[in-house]
Length: 104
Image (cartoon, rainbow, N blue to C red):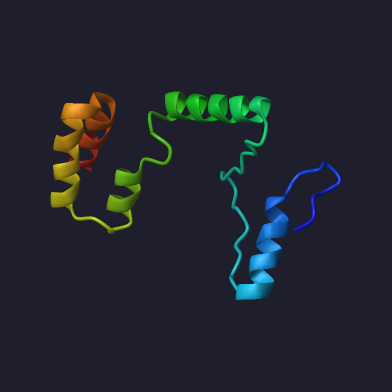
């Protein structure tokens, strides 16, 4: 892949390459979705602030693998409960957040 005029490898070029070579499907991000560039220290900081603000205002966490797996039915409630217990020993914030899912 060639570098862009900004001397960067662009994700859109990689997507085009994969689409042409492997015949993948690509979907556009919908309203409310965001793509956050984190290629520089400033953009990484901006993305971090964006996520922090959303989590605080909405009271939801972004990209918690256990939550995603449970909501998409990749893991059972039993497995979620085991993970909740595991986090009680290692990460009380995840523990408390995931514990809320049990009652939804």
